[in-house]
Length: 258
Ligand SMILES: Nc1ncnc2c1ncn2[C@@H]1O[C@H](COP(=O)(O)OP(=O)(O)OP(=O)(O)O)[C@@H](O)[C@H]1O
Image 1 (cartoon, rainbow, N blue to C red):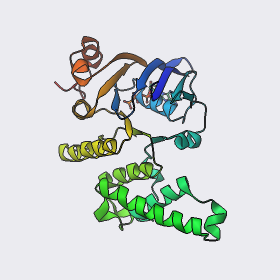
Image 2: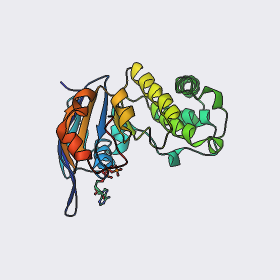
Image 3: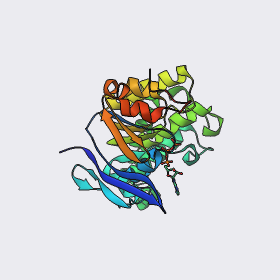
Image 4: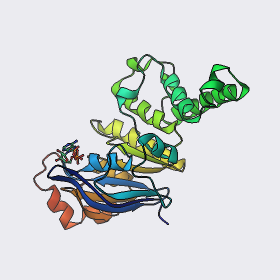
């Protein structure tokens, strides 16, 4: 049985079919990237998988159980977690506090337990603190853990968004354009970070424009164009696929890694 199964996902906005019957499987422990020219439907597909949008047709299954149609909160509880946009970072808290709070929200002893500072709640606090320190450490944020989020440079803030997602103990992490706007050095660091996440046994599904990074990091790639899947395969297979090359022609800000 496949780990995450995307089955005939379709999203219509009025007359526009943004995602058109897309199907693919994600295997446990792999890094799978979804690429496609601008406006191909990548973001919409991601929102459908994270249940931030309801599909017009099709479904998503995790370990054989249907998760599409559940609230984003419930989907996150099944282990499908999307990175948070920077806006959900609490700017007046430190990096560490942000991750501690995210962990507590996901694993709390309940509001009453927290209120009465029960032993269970105190044990939770300790666990949250240790967990947050560990996450910040392996994401390379250990040295800025006590900085207020509002003082962090852009790149660190983005990584903090990933740290907050990791605090929810994902089984599969959905990364939305993790390399966007990064210089080559930042991209290298981010690639290492994503590989580090996978080494912790977490499956990674990412949407990305940066073809060079995608070619380096992915086990497999799914290509969509005008809402439909046009190819699926290893980076080497995708690079030489004439349909993919054709779809990218005329996109001067894109290359497919040649
Ligand atoms: N909420 C919406 N209402 C109407 N149309 C939408 C909505 N969201 C997306 N679209 C349209 O659906 C199509 C796919 O958009 P989407 O953002 O998913 O593509 P994308 O591949 O992520 O694009 P990009 O690479 O530019 O981020 C586009 O034509 C877009 O205008």
